[in-house]
Image 1: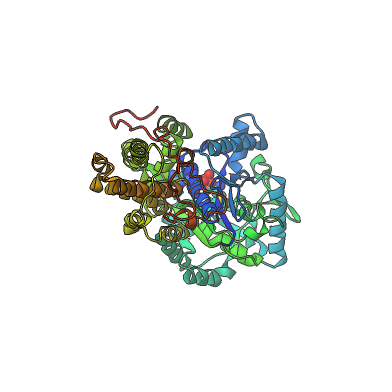
Image 2 (image 1 turned 120 degrees about the vertical axis):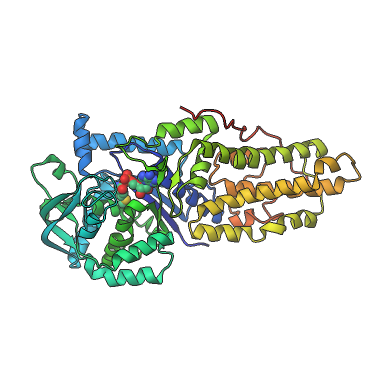
Length: 536
Ligand code: ME8
């Protein structure tokens, strides 16, 4: 049995409305969790023992107080309202998280106090003076070098470009510097700890400048914003810095006897903006607490629009409403497919483009799996009355093995590298193989001379149907509803206990059998008109 698998997303600031970035990262975690459930022979939509996917919201930022007030709400009311927006957005995206954590929940706050007290007890926290460059737009202090080298100009926020402010205060510090050597050794000894590799090299580069201790508290003043957050244990004059509070969500959510076995996380998924916190500060805090480190910190790149970073000031976000309009016209599966396969999974940014959406939709879905499944079901209907014929199994399998021996092993290997685009493409490559065999061997021509060619036609169609069954399994983590439609029409839903390896074995225990009824079913994806304007 594979070991328990815990997958997390960032917890999102409740101040923002959910947009493509939040949906994208959470989609990656969702697709990975679905593959992990299949790996274990569990229904992909979950819940399943052995797999735990966590997402949630980060609610103790100062801006929650100010924005809430501007809307006539208390910070908690404002958080409730916006956390609900994220939950609705994720339900719309058909995400399968096992839990949704909010940092204002008691279960989180009480654990954070325990963790900070533990750090104090172990001598890794001290009271000191801090003065530095503060990025108000991101709620974080920056090092002198990062502040100077911001891509938007010296002493501006590297993320938003807004001017940094000089701040001084008395703070509790975490002895980050004490863990520098151990952290570097861990990163160097575990090439998969920070992915993609370009990001790993950046972190190692920055680590060469050395690590300074980091403040983990903020003084409480008359400003109401400064009163929002979790108080430091044994010092009510300070609250725990929002980032420290937030990072602990990964632990607080599963730190119970029922869930404890999920630690450490298999992968923390996020974008590159918050990699430093996850690849440096967080692992050092975990070392200080004597906890195991996550297997992987995966930082993808950004969705951009027309080559520009999406930002509030430019007002160019791909909003949830835009995503919903795409789903309404092309199906939610199509939206998930586009985001998954064309997104910034690796080290390069990805442009959200309507033309690309339609191209990929037509190529992979309408003309790909959709057309192939309907063509094969139609031929089986026409030549064999909708029933899978007897055939020479070795002949059918030889056509499959020509390209796809050890398919499950390769897909699971890609999953372990978090190469989800490759996992998804494995299904598409099977569909292409089916199309290729059909156009080379022309069963529709052979069928004109029946029963003489019956055995060969049966062999081709058995190969095609069985290959498409396997493709439907591999595509199901992305195309959650349409592949279930195929399973219903063909009576081939994965059974409990059938692992990905069993499901991908051609003619194996999960395979389609002669005599199986394959209904034609409704078209999976209608062809899209590339000339049509983007959905409003
Ligand atoms: O940083 N492209 O929350 P956040 C791709 N609360 N992904 C994007 C994106 C884009 N253009 N924009 C945002 C925070 N994201 C903290 C996290 S975790 C302990 C605390 C996604 O609401 C991406 O996952 O600003 C990025 O890392 C995250 O949203 C930042 O979300």
